[in-house]
Amino acid sequence: MSTTTQILSSIPVDALTGAISVPIYQTATFVQEAPGVNKGYDYSRSGNPTRAALEEVLAGLEGGATGLAFASGLAAIDTVLKLLKSGDEILAVDDIYGGAYRLFTHVYEKFGIHIRYIDTSDVVLVQRSITPATRLIWLESPTNPTLKVSDIKAIASLAKAHGAWLCVDNTFTSPVLQKPLALGADIVVHSATKYLGGHSDLIAGAIVAKDPELGARLKFLQNAAGNVLGPFDSWLVLRGLETLPLRVRQQSQSAWAIAQYLETHEAVAAVYYPGLTSHPNHELASRQQKGFGGVISFRLKQDDQQSATAFLKTLHLFHLAESLGGVKSLCCLPCEMTHKSVPREKRLLTGVTDGFIRLSVGIEETEDLIADLEQAFERLAGNGIEAGIPEHLLATA
Ligand code: P1T
Image (cartoon, rainbow, N blue to C red; front, side):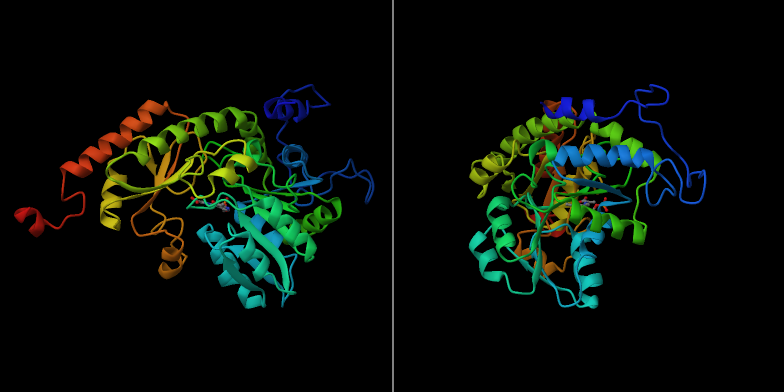
């Protein structure tokens, strides 16, 4: 069955009225017939029918036993970390979303959880880095923002052999392009703010656990701390999911064309996109993913913040904003925006320079997006001040 058919057929029709759109149960509580006697719901933190419909679809899409919907991607990540206890260790990918880095390092380190960031695209390094204290291996694949790809299947068997959980942040590919649980991961998390929601109009997160017992532990933690997604936002994500395969297909096609365009552009020093044969993990990505997604990163030859900022400010269709995966194209400067909480020296080690640019490709026509980039390159070439060349040098140039 295709993913589109799977999504559309698994969203339930309302049993009471036949409504084809899941009703929004905007309620805090549910009236009980007698204490403890209810119709399956007692209080919306513990469970809500609109959220439950979404959670069911998420579990199905990722191929897991339990789906859980959260108030944000970070709330979902936070809940996975609560599986750990003091003295446990996390091995995490070194190129990681800045907010996840902040949560790991600045919140969980102080509770005695040790985090080591390594290049997980190197399986041998992962193997060497596991210690008896390693309880969780954390991957983003592809990573945010350098689009590095790690071998989920190989790392899953290492994790299993050492009694650690493997959690994959599947935000960048969505279940349309990659199914980490089928490759052996134990947990998948999402910033549902991105592709799953798809319209940049909500903040949401998701967890899918492969195993029902682990799912029940995560559900307990979610309810205990109250990190839930509200009914209306649950409905918005459900509605977004209906077009997920169509959006991701268009975004991937455009991104591939744009990555090729950028790679041959004289003003570009490097392009990071797993769909390019020049990408170091291209072969693995082709095997592991059904497509390469809608995010591309690149560096200008003038690899400094001033030039990159000038370039970003001249784009019209790519809006300068944090986030990704929505129908409208976005662009950002990770060093000042999404990855500001990662120390500069750590960022530079993973290649995220001060002039490093990230694009999130939307569903606009491919040629219009390329034309937008082209005019920005022309302005960069034609205008030394905007390109960051100091005025006193321009005078002598
Ligand atoms: O923003 P939130 O819904 O809490 O999700 C956090 C998150 C988790 N994982 C990945 C891979 C992410 O990219 C994010 C959020 N990222 C951005 C806001 C961004 O622009 O990169």
